Length: 82
Length: 147
View (cartoon, rainbow over the protein chains, first blue to last red):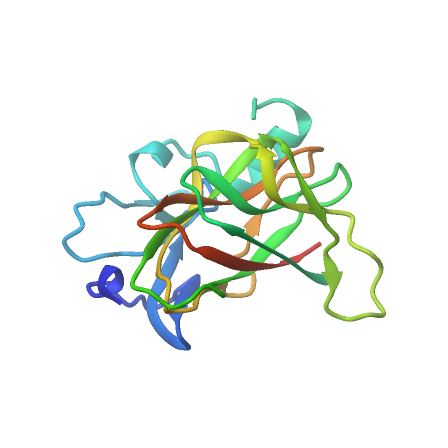
């Protein structure tokens, strides 16, 4: 499928996108927002790594280290606005 | 922990929710599998979907999530499709981005432990949102989740 043509395969993927039964892309998971994203070569998307959490982050919006588990607790306790 | 599936379909309109999973204060639903296909006459149409968080539910047709094992209890989380008033989507909280051609079936599946988690807050949830569609066609979606 065109959009996933340049998708990079990952050594330890967090998920997969499958089109008509064929795996076309791996997905990685952001340790701060819990979102999954595909790594597309040449897309220009900026990704990153959190050394505290030891995992990938999806982009600059998740640059500040708040581990997702902590964020969940903060949402549920009302300490962080939804 | 038990697994459930919920399903819905609609003629795609940009910025409309196809299907949602809504949490309750006692459970954190974890989405691990999403399937999107189309029952419409095959054509080379395309659609772009987001899985986006919302903080308040909207108005739609309720779907009762079905347990995958019929010995399990009924789901606490709820689900809706065909929204007439959209949920309050949270900006910048798009958890998945998928594109599809109408002729193809698209599936996203998470590795165990890497699911998309919804906080245990009433009205909080995930929306399978049609971000854009080239020409309108009907999409059928199924979401599997654990709670």
